Length: 131
Image (cartoon, one colour):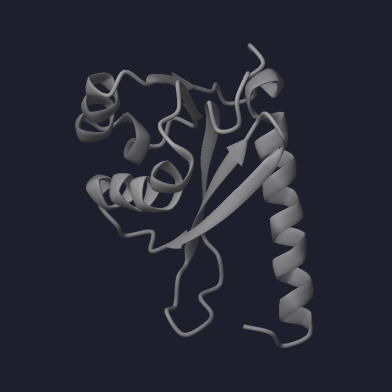
């Protein structure tokens, strides 16, 4: 995996599902976007039932609008990321889509660590009754 030259040039995106719904908007899943260059991340709450186009709109409003278009997006092989609408959109925009394998530490180790840390934080907040 090449090292990015600019922040958000290469983005990892992963979905975390099966969260216990909480808070006012009752989200049950998270999209995790990882900035490989400086090891920063963003969590985007969403509903697991959203369509592929909703995933793309959420990503564009919260990541692309603030950080610019990536040169490469690395994601898991989730149907939301392999759908025709998602792949066609980023092909038109000139963004390369790369899909990680089931276990491929070189492509997803950073994202997996971020997800684990996020799950730990949520567990600690829930232990204290924070929604």
